[in-house]
Length: 291
Image (cartoon, rainbow, N blue to C red; front, side, top):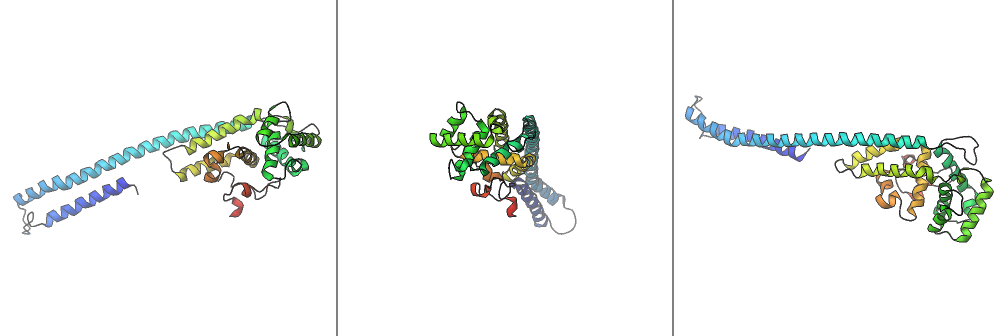
């Protein structure tokens, strides 16, 4: 219970206790069971001065608490209005993403379904193994290709070097990718042109919830649950691979804000992804499959 309400209740109880004490005290009651105007006048004066003041103070505290609660309700209403508006924009951003066929499925598919299928297809192939034996580097290499596309003159080579790959590893990756994809698939799409806005908006939506000062941790977690419920399994997987990649150079959500562990963003992912990657090894949170 709120401290102000508890204090007001204590004041009311104290007022009644004082009133009872005054009534039974000999200075205000001669126990003749006949009303004495003089004693009654003294009792009334003291009661109104002491008990009345206690009750008035309790009323002021309760009025203050009512105003604060009304203000908080108004703030939450404003917050929820903006939250659901941002959530709607997030769904619209997802729905606007183009459909295409993945390298392994020649039919048009949902953006994230196809992108994740390509990511996991490369991770299961020898493509990543030839670049590095370290799981995180393999994920980063594959993600960079799927995110920036295959173009040595474009961002791909720059990004691969930024993540620590040497020229020999990069040449091997380009060569193997050309062999595996046969010149098709989403690896040539330059996803960042489409997905960058989606990820930035999603980041701002989570930050909007996390930065809210007038809702507690439990309420924030419930709003994140609503957001997480809007994400498809393929979206969660894509964001998971993105987080591993960004974590390498300290630009991930987890690295900057600890959102993954604080809100268990990936708790709905399976124990082992289709790529063979185990999310638990990268983000030590409680997953649904552990229940």
